[in-house]
Amino acid sequence: MPEEKEKKMIDIYVMGRRYKVPEGLTIMTALEYAGYKYVRGCGCRGGFCGACSTVYRNKEDYKLKMDLACQTAVEDGMFLVQLPFVPSVRTMYEVDEVNPEKDDNILLEHYPEIARCVSCNTCTKACPQDIEVMDYVQASLRGDIDRAASLSFDCIQCGLCSIRCPADIKHYHLAQEARRLKGKYIDTLSKQLKERVKELDDYVYDEKFKELVKMTKEEIKKVYDKREFQKGE
Amino acid sequence: MIFMDGYLYYPGCTLKTKASDYEESAMAIMEALGKPLVEMDNWYCCGAVQSLTTDDLIHQIAPIRTMCCAQEQGEKVLVTLCDMCYNVLKQANQRMKDQPDDLDTMNDFLDEDPDYLGEVEVYHLFEILRDMKKEISKKVVKPLNNLKITPYYGCMLLRPTGIAIDDTEDPKIMEELLGQIGVDVIDNPKRTECCGSYHTVNRSDIVEKRVEDLVARAVEDGADAIALSCPLCQFNLDYHQRTTDYEIPIFYLTELIALAFGLEVGMKKHWVDPKKMLKEKNILK
Image 1 (cartoon, rainbow over the protein chains, first blue to last red):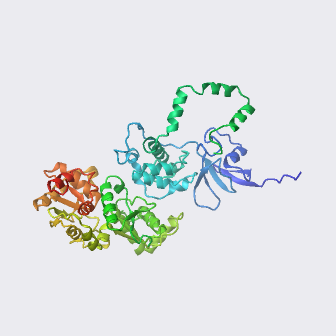
Image 2 (cartoon, rainbow over the protein chains, first blue to last red):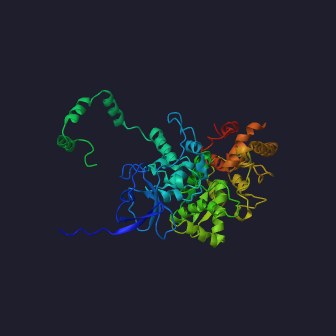
Image 3 (cartoon, each protein chain N blue to C red):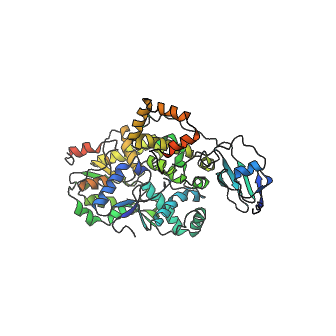
């Protein structure tokens, strides 16, 4: 058996204090290696929940960088801190009561600060999801809900854009409203969805569910492999 | 140029919302003239008002990003309709051409994108139309002979002088275009005065005085309507007439050209309904 190569140790600075951690860890695991325990600022550990926003600077680089701690590897000389929470306010609205058909620009009405955007693009640079954040703010400004929703589709609501914005825009809440309005007023309603909801209302699958609950893991795997839906997706 | 048979077009936010009548009519007449306006793949809000502070480079970023978008599409000519957008884009772009240090600073900041080379030229649609007079008169199927129209320029097309589309004190471009479609053009000595602009937001009394003054003169001189191009002037002159004794339509010039081309487009978002007057004049049925 080949001898396991000893991992190279690197220096990171957590809130100013130096720790030696093995190279190749994510920021999240490196912090745990250093002895920190997460109370906030940690969630799915898979890059989907947006809870582990991290702010850091690399050695000899003047730029402040942002990423998800569970998705980013530590580098030698990294200065970092975890953000437990992003303070931000959301405009309340009833999705059934607004009307994008009649109203030229609901998004601008709900988030008037988007008119303060000077196109500096700092939001886009902060985004760990590589979303064109500035472009969806600009689309919102001109009332293009469809484009704002499509561009922001991958948003995981980490809030880093809104922490960096010099115009104090609440990008991720704005984008969420755009996606809700698109779902409600722009996209066509799926015919299958209606049928499926009716099936559920009629308890069509109740017996099947009871059977599934009684099955062993192996039996469930077999049933799953024989399924007729979503094959190869 | 990629668009041998058309122009790369920068809409601006207002053209996509409150001033959609202007966009619709301009697109229709350019299509009819065989030089369609093709909207840019990507563009940014111009900023609406040219910044007057000394250290103002941050306010030039948005318009220059739009220049970068035009450059990326391989275009040297960028056409816009809104007077505010025209004014801001043209001034910001001119500054990049005149002041290479500012262009360098700008490109340093826009480090995520290729450098802007300063080669795009910004035009207002009226400048394009001025060079197409023959084509315009050929397309006229319904000359608006019994219509008395007075042109209104406002500020943004003519000031400052360096970016004016015509003589700052004595512009003729709108008069000439109106002449091409058979309109009886009424001289307007107040055509380069201000409409009150953004005072409409918190000092509507100022705008109301301006509108009263401008519309009164037009009516006294016998005009049936006013033609203009700026969406903010359009809003002020149209909406604020409710505080005056007058009720005349405020057209985008492109709506009138479209009418003369036999196209009934735009004219949906006006406060004073232009169709009422057009029906009285037997121009619309």
